[in-house]
Length: 259
View (tube, one colour):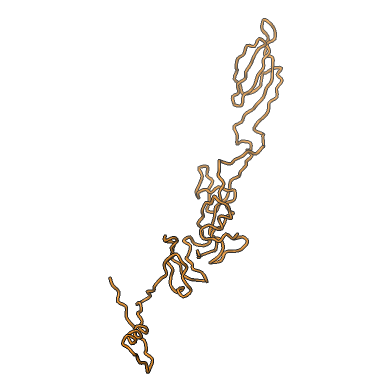
Protein backbone atom coordinates (compact mmCIF):
# COMPACT_ATOMS: atom_id res chain seq x y z
CA UNK A 1 0.00 0.00 0.00
CA UNK A 2 1.44 3.36 -1.02
CA UNK A 3 1.60 6.31 1.34
CA UNK A 4 1.00 9.87 0.10
CA UNK A 5 3.15 12.54 1.71
CA UNK A 6 1.80 16.09 1.94
CA UNK A 7 4.09 18.74 0.38
CA UNK A 8 4.63 21.99 2.27
CA UNK A 9 5.79 24.99 0.25
CA UNK A 10 8.54 27.32 1.37
CA UNK A 11 8.67 31.13 1.19
CA UNK A 12 10.44 32.77 -1.72
CA UNK A 13 12.58 35.81 -0.90
CA UNK A 14 11.14 39.08 -2.17
CA UNK A 15 12.60 40.53 -5.35
CA UNK A 16 13.84 37.13 -6.44
CA UNK A 17 14.21 36.68 -10.17
CA UNK A 18 15.49 33.83 -12.27
CA UNK A 19 17.45 33.81 -15.47
CA UNK A 20 16.04 30.45 -16.53
CA UNK A 21 13.01 28.35 -15.74
CA UNK A 22 15.32 25.64 -14.46
CA UNK A 23 16.62 28.00 -11.79
CA UNK A 24 13.03 28.73 -10.77
CA UNK A 25 12.23 25.02 -10.58
CA UNK A 26 15.35 24.28 -8.53
CA UNK A 27 14.46 26.98 -5.99
CA UNK A 28 10.92 25.66 -5.62
CA UNK A 29 12.24 22.15 -5.01
CA UNK A 30 14.80 23.45 -2.51
CA UNK A 31 12.23 25.28 -0.40
CA UNK A 32 9.50 22.65 -0.55
CA UNK A 33 9.19 19.96 2.15
CA UNK A 34 7.60 16.50 2.31
CA UNK A 35 6.59 15.47 5.84
CA UNK A 36 5.65 12.02 7.12
CA UNK A 37 2.26 12.16 8.84
CA UNK A 38 2.00 11.20 12.56
CA UNK A 39 5.17 10.01 14.35
CA UNK A 40 6.85 8.38 11.37
CA UNK A 41 10.56 8.96 10.98
CA UNK A 42 13.50 7.67 8.98
CA UNK A 43 16.17 5.49 10.61
CA UNK A 44 19.85 4.58 10.49
CA UNK A 45 20.80 1.13 9.23
CA UNK A 46 24.07 -0.80 8.96
CA UNK A 47 27.34 -1.62 10.70
CA UNK A 48 28.68 1.93 10.93
CA UNK A 49 27.93 4.21 13.87
CA UNK A 50 25.59 7.01 12.68
CA UNK A 51 26.93 10.54 12.47
CA UNK A 52 26.07 13.18 15.07
CA UNK A 53 23.56 14.73 12.64
CA UNK A 54 21.59 11.47 12.60
CA UNK A 55 21.32 10.90 16.35
CA UNK A 56 17.65 11.95 16.28
CA UNK A 57 16.82 8.72 14.44
CA UNK A 58 16.96 5.11 15.74
CA UNK A 59 19.79 2.88 14.54
CA UNK A 60 19.05 -0.64 13.34
CA UNK A 61 22.54 -1.96 13.91
CA UNK A 62 24.11 -4.85 12.00
CA UNK A 63 27.43 -6.61 12.60
CA UNK A 64 28.93 -7.94 9.41
CA UNK A 65 25.51 -7.56 7.82
CA UNK A 66 23.83 -9.72 10.51
CA UNK A 67 21.16 -8.11 12.72
CA UNK A 68 22.22 -7.02 16.21
CA UNK A 69 19.46 -4.80 17.62
CA UNK A 70 17.82 -1.40 17.55
CA UNK A 71 19.64 1.40 19.37
CA UNK A 72 18.55 4.91 20.37
CA UNK A 73 20.96 7.70 21.20
CA UNK A 74 20.50 8.39 24.92
CA UNK A 75 22.71 9.55 27.78
CA UNK A 76 25.63 10.09 25.41
CA UNK A 77 25.49 6.52 24.06
CA UNK A 78 23.82 4.51 21.36
CA UNK A 79 21.92 2.21 23.71
CA UNK A 80 19.33 -0.55 23.91
CA UNK A 81 17.76 -1.96 27.05
CA UNK A 82 19.00 -5.33 28.29
CA UNK A 83 16.29 -7.99 27.98
CA UNK A 84 16.79 -9.15 31.60
CA UNK A 85 15.84 -6.49 34.18
CA UNK A 86 18.66 -4.88 36.14
CA UNK A 87 19.09 -6.06 39.77
CA UNK A 88 16.28 -8.57 39.24
CA UNK A 89 15.58 -12.11 40.47
CA UNK A 90 17.02 -13.94 37.45
CA UNK A 91 20.20 -15.99 37.97
CA UNK A 92 22.52 -17.73 35.52
CA UNK A 93 25.18 -20.43 36.00
CA UNK A 94 28.66 -19.23 35.03
CA UNK A 95 31.62 -21.60 34.49
CA UNK A 96 34.17 -18.91 33.60
CA UNK A 97 36.13 -16.56 35.86
CA UNK A 98 34.63 -13.47 37.56
CA UNK A 99 36.75 -11.26 35.27
CA UNK A 100 35.21 -12.92 32.22
CA UNK A 101 31.76 -12.50 33.74
CA UNK A 102 32.21 -8.75 34.14
CA UNK A 103 32.90 -8.44 30.38
CA UNK A 104 30.07 -10.77 29.37
CA UNK A 105 26.82 -9.76 27.64
CA UNK A 106 27.74 -6.14 26.97
CA UNK A 107 29.63 -5.49 30.21
CA UNK A 108 32.84 -3.45 30.11
CA UNK A 109 34.92 -5.81 32.31
CA UNK A 110 35.09 -3.55 35.40
CA UNK A 111 34.79 -5.21 38.83
CA UNK A 112 31.37 -4.03 40.10
CA UNK A 113 32.56 -4.18 43.71
CA UNK A 114 35.25 -1.59 42.87
CA UNK A 115 33.31 0.67 40.49
CA UNK A 116 29.53 0.53 40.82
CA UNK A 117 27.72 0.15 37.48
CA UNK A 118 25.52 2.95 36.20
CA UNK A 119 22.59 2.72 33.82
CA UNK A 120 25.03 2.91 30.87
CA UNK A 121 28.41 1.70 32.17
CA UNK A 122 30.00 -1.12 34.16
CA UNK A 123 29.57 -4.88 34.34
CA UNK A 124 26.25 -6.37 33.26
CA UNK A 125 26.56 -9.40 35.58
CA UNK A 126 28.19 -10.07 38.95
CA UNK A 127 28.73 -13.13 41.19
CA UNK A 128 25.89 -13.74 43.65
CA UNK A 129 27.83 -14.53 46.83
CA UNK A 130 24.71 -15.87 48.57
CA UNK A 131 25.37 -19.13 46.66
CA UNK A 132 29.04 -19.42 47.68
CA UNK A 133 29.67 -23.09 48.64
CA UNK A 134 25.93 -23.84 48.63
CA UNK A 135 23.70 -26.10 46.53
CA UNK A 136 20.41 -24.71 45.18
CA UNK A 137 17.33 -26.74 46.15
CA UNK A 138 13.71 -26.37 45.13
CA UNK A 139 11.28 -24.73 47.54
CA UNK A 140 9.12 -27.39 49.20
CA UNK A 141 9.05 -30.06 51.90
CA UNK A 142 11.44 -33.01 52.18
CA UNK A 143 10.17 -36.52 52.82
CA UNK A 144 11.50 -36.28 56.37
CA UNK A 145 9.32 -33.24 57.09
CA UNK A 146 11.87 -30.43 56.84
CA UNK A 147 10.70 -27.57 54.63
CA UNK A 148 12.61 -25.12 52.42
CA UNK A 149 11.29 -21.58 51.98
CA UNK A 150 12.29 -19.09 49.28
CA UNK A 151 15.80 -17.82 50.10
CA UNK A 152 15.96 -20.38 52.92
CA UNK A 153 19.29 -21.91 53.96
CA UNK A 154 20.35 -25.05 55.80
CA UNK A 155 22.44 -28.20 55.67
CA UNK A 156 26.05 -28.86 56.68
CA UNK A 157 29.14 -30.03 54.81
CA UNK A 158 30.21 -32.19 57.79
CA UNK A 159 28.14 -33.90 60.47
CA UNK A 160 28.85 -35.78 63.68
CA UNK A 161 26.40 -38.59 64.32
CA UNK A 162 24.82 -38.53 67.76
CA UNK A 163 23.87 -41.57 69.84
CA UNK A 164 20.73 -43.05 68.41
CA UNK A 165 21.59 -42.13 64.80
CA UNK A 166 23.35 -45.44 64.10
CA UNK A 167 22.24 -49.02 64.75
CA UNK A 168 23.51 -50.17 68.15
CA UNK A 169 26.55 -52.42 67.72
CA UNK A 170 29.73 -53.62 69.44
CA UNK A 171 33.21 -54.76 68.51
CA UNK A 172 35.49 -56.92 70.69
CA UNK A 173 37.75 -59.96 71.21
CA UNK A 174 38.50 -62.30 74.12
CA UNK A 175 39.00 -65.87 75.34
CA UNK A 176 37.29 -68.08 77.86
CA UNK A 177 37.09 -71.66 79.26
CA UNK A 178 33.78 -73.47 78.86
CA UNK A 179 34.54 -76.84 80.50
CA UNK A 180 36.51 -80.07 80.13
CA UNK A 181 36.42 -83.15 77.98
CA UNK A 182 38.24 -86.48 78.14
CA UNK A 183 41.50 -84.75 77.20
CA UNK A 184 41.32 -81.82 79.53
CA UNK A 185 40.24 -78.18 79.55
CA UNK A 186 38.52 -76.89 76.44
CA UNK A 187 39.79 -73.45 75.49
CA UNK A 188 37.70 -71.23 73.31
CA UNK A 189 38.39 -67.91 71.55
CA UNK A 190 35.66 -65.57 70.34
CA UNK A 191 35.07 -62.50 68.31
CA UNK A 192 31.86 -60.57 68.30
CA UNK A 193 30.78 -59.19 64.93
CA UNK A 194 29.32 -55.74 64.31
CA UNK A 195 25.67 -56.67 64.50
CA UNK A 196 23.02 -57.91 66.95
CA UNK A 197 22.48 -60.67 67.77
CA UNK A 198 26.21 -61.25 67.74
CA UNK A 199 27.91 -64.26 66.22
CA UNK A 200 30.58 -65.76 68.46
CA UNK A 201 33.24 -67.78 66.65
CA UNK A 202 34.57 -70.43 69.05
CA UNK A 203 37.53 -72.75 68.61
CA UNK A 204 39.07 -75.46 70.86
CA UNK A 205 42.72 -76.23 71.33
CA UNK A 206 42.66 -78.74 68.48
CA UNK A 207 41.57 -76.09 65.95
CA UNK A 208 38.01 -77.36 65.81
CA UNK A 209 35.60 -74.45 65.39
CA UNK A 210 31.91 -73.70 65.56
CA UNK A 211 29.61 -70.70 65.90
CA UNK A 212 27.18 -69.86 68.67
CA UNK A 213 24.66 -67.02 68.69
CA UNK A 214 24.17 -64.72 71.65
CA UNK A 215 23.47 -61.15 72.62
CA UNK A 216 25.60 -60.80 75.80
CA UNK A 217 28.79 -62.15 77.26
CA UNK A 218 26.93 -63.63 80.24
CA UNK A 219 28.19 -67.09 81.19
CA UNK A 220 31.55 -66.78 79.53
CA UNK A 221 33.35 -67.92 82.67
CA UNK A 222 37.00 -67.01 82.91
CA UNK A 223 36.81 -64.76 79.90
CA UNK A 224 39.17 -61.88 79.29
CA UNK A 225 37.35 -59.36 77.16
CA UNK A 226 37.80 -55.92 75.68
CA UNK A 227 34.55 -54.64 74.19
CA UNK A 228 34.22 -51.19 72.62
CA UNK A 229 30.87 -49.45 72.16
CA UNK A 230 31.34 -48.00 68.67
CA UNK A 231 28.27 -45.78 68.97
CA UNK A 232 30.24 -43.37 71.16
CA UNK A 233 32.52 -42.24 68.30
CA UNK A 234 32.27 -38.47 67.70
CA UNK A 235 34.40 -37.76 64.63
CA UNK A 236 32.66 -35.65 61.97
CA UNK A 237 32.41 -37.14 58.50
CA UNK A 238 31.95 -35.63 55.05
CA UNK A 239 28.32 -35.08 54.14
CA UNK A 240 28.71 -33.69 50.60
CA UNK A 241 27.32 -35.37 47.47
CA UNK A 242 29.40 -35.19 44.26
CA UNK A 243 29.61 -31.60 43.01
CA UNK A 244 30.92 -29.39 40.19
CA UNK A 245 32.09 -25.86 40.99
CA UNK A 246 30.30 -22.98 39.20
CA UNK A 247 29.36 -19.38 39.92
CA UNK A 248 25.78 -18.22 40.23
CA UNK A 249 25.50 -14.76 38.67
CA UNK A 250 22.92 -11.99 38.95
CA UNK A 251 22.27 -8.82 36.97
CA UNK A 252 23.90 -5.63 38.21
CA UNK A 253 22.20 -2.22 38.25
CA UNK A 254 23.32 -1.53 34.68
CA UNK A 255 20.28 -1.12 32.42
CA UNK A 256 21.52 -0.57 28.86
CA UNK A 257 23.76 -2.33 26.34
CA UNK A 258 25.76 0.39 24.60
CA UNK A 259 27.89 0.83 21.49
